[in-house]
Image 1: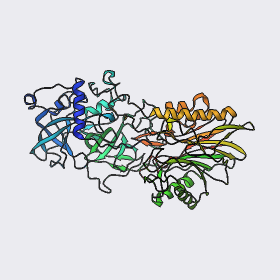
Image 2: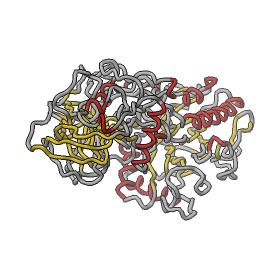
Image 3: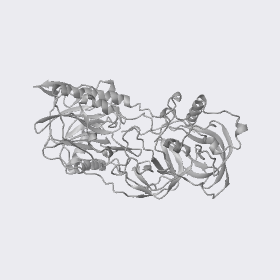
Image 4: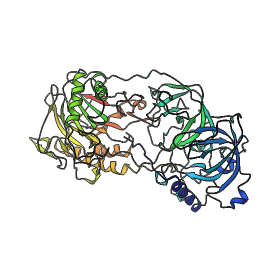
Length: 614
């Protein structure tokens, strides 16, 4: 799954780095602070690019009206000039970083003397855009109870269809120094409104409420809608310009932020300053006034039961499951297997942690974790699954430190046989040999080339040999490297760099080569490669996996607007995939939406199931 950013960056260090870089790039004009400090307005501070022309300089008595106050996290307030200039590229609002709880109120007319800063949330290495702000302020309240400047309406008519300009090659692909064109590019529009009072009307929720009191909406209801109310991300150029994060400036007390699912609507008016979120690396409405959630019709899906002669194979990322999780998590995941997936014959599960979870004490066994899960499945009315996996080397496979996540196979022994061939360990590589003209694994279960550097600090693929109604079927369970380290869609670098792909490409080559080995022994061997691939069906990772037509991506059997198993930043997208060899014909794929679209999640991934007749 995409890594959740966790930034701990010294603010003054980050600001200094941006100013230095901007000076080097010629984006700033150095002047005498005493000569130019007086008479400066907010639009002079913001300028016509993403970096203030006054960054690092002192300004005095900058006037405006307070439009929003933030009392937690990055504390401060936004204020806006009620007398704008005529240039649509210059924002009339800016954030004042006070470090402690601000004493001003919305509607106060103030003057601010401060230093102009460019702060990059997450630091320059994150690739995030910088936020122009005023630091070390002296604030004078002139009057109270003034009308807030009229909000700029963000809607389907005002947001351009093009996402962002191409980055300046001379600046390493950065768009920081480019003059904003808010009528042509969505990111330029949002940047030209940075810090300003904005408003959206009734909008469809495309990303459910999360633990951080955030949700996502789209102001473009016709922009790649999914049947269940989301917005589809189906190519690198389909970023979806209408997406916006919504946060609240009200204290994050229990019940203060609305609970919404994908397909619900945020009705009425949502209004507040437009901010740039430090953790998501994206624009967000810091709502002073929050609309009301109207429930939609999105319900958890239920797939059909496989027929007697159909083999049902599923993949499910159970999100760091360990024995210290509450029983309710086990029970809800079990209900997903039994009630929503109809008890598949085989389930490849990912992110199973060891017996004491994320405790770094050398424990790698997961029999307690798995036993508790199987018991929950039985209690939910499902079969008593058998389990096959290989314990990893301690701390060698990534994930939460000490958790030792791994993937493995649950299978119903009343319906499926597993061919055990002993000897597979965390470091032994399974291979393919010919037995009576048919492929056989040297170790089953066995890991695919665990010494390959492609799998450093990542989960090694697990291969297993199964039989169903006398037919041989090979499965490879995967959990490829995460997208951690990739630049955000809203990055200052356009197009953003996807540095994490390098490892996944090598991982895909290894799995592809292994499938080719199986098919070199028996061309019509039936192979299913599945799991959390942490990449899209249109990605180069998927193309490498299918090289030589040894596999095909079953996602393409679905209508385009149904190809998603994960929701990230308001985009519905595929990360979990099932690929099959050419001998697997007439299959039926179902991505069963029970988690990703909902605020109440048992995992952040939706499971998928494929049914076919070997």
